[in-house]
Amino acid sequence: MSPDRHSFHVHLVSDATGETLVAVARAAASQYAAASSIEHVYPLVRSARQLERVLDEIADEPGIVLYTLVDEDLIGKLESRCRDLGCPCLSVLEPVFTLLRSYLGTEQNKQPGAQHVLNADYFKRIDALNYTMAHDDGQYADDLAAADVVLLGVSRTSKTPTSIYLANRGVKTANIPLIPDLPPPHGLEKLKGPLIVGLVASPERIVAIRHNRVLGLEGAMPGRLQDGAYVDPDSVAAEITASRRFCARHGWPTIDVTRRSIEETAAGVIAMLNEHRAKRLAAVIATT
Image (cartoon, rainbow, N blue to C red; front, side, top):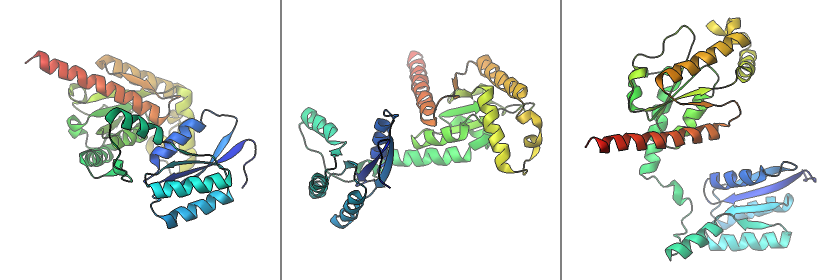
């Protein structure tokens, strides 16, 4: 497929997972709404043979080339071939390396995938993910005190995906559904350690998502899914109002996820968590 004036090929070449590169490329491309990028992602490129296959694909679909490589030989071959092909080629990390070299007065280690070593932070993320998966959708609610964050919300307020995203950032996250006529878990109101955050959305947004869910289940709908209240706008509005009041009554902050991505919601939660931890630390210092 050849790009037209409304689309362009972006080749993303990395010697690690490529997550950083993809995130940077998408963040930049999102600022150009008139054109769409066609992504080609090549992770774990660490040998000349692997690079040759990448270069063949770049030649077949010319476009912009962004890379995160640290091997000088591979970089030289990539940049040389891109010049021959007339493809713009850029290291997205080199400006950062240059700044760090200038500030620290030392060279980088040039170790591919150095950020993915099995260190304490890695195992912290694994521990958080295990906890979060075990405490999804109200499970094991007697163990909420071990959480860093507890998310509350009516059905379809993105509690689970937000929880998983936070877990990948090393945040132990439990999520609790707020269901009409069912009390919240015993002891929730008495939790002192975790940050408790309510997720809310507009009734129109929730109704639309729930309609899609019902249609996707194709009749295999247990309990409330067969009940019109699940997708009734007035009932949904009442659910959301009740959830807002519940959080307000206990002084728990809320985040409106109507127009937020999972990443934006998680960023808001992390900001609140940092403030929450700072206040708890200040309280401990004040009592010592």
